[in-house]
Image (cartoon, rainbow, N blue to C red; front, side):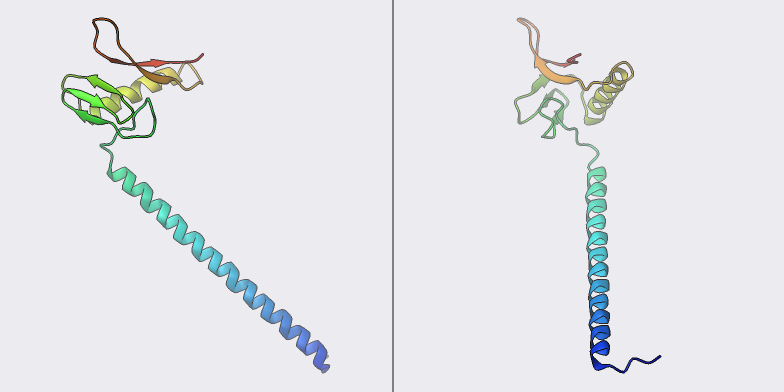
Length: 128
């Protein structure tokens, strides 16, 4: 049965326009989401490219400066070392954290300690 009432046609056209606008809105939101996902992926890839960086385990904010004879951070961490590299330090931190996580579910904390005659050391302790 054909609709001939102009009011009914106007209502149907209005509904059709609303559906078109809704569809365009969904498409725009989807495209924004895709752009956001792409930006996140690019940021992650940029982070992976900077693999030589080691985050300070004490402040957990800044990247450590690792040289052959010292490890330091803007937060005040300063430790004398011998033949240290970012790779060696990362490996030491990862293996220590992995060993701890095999026995304990809690996250350890890192601090810098120094004795009377000792040089500064990085100490990992667990609140549990």
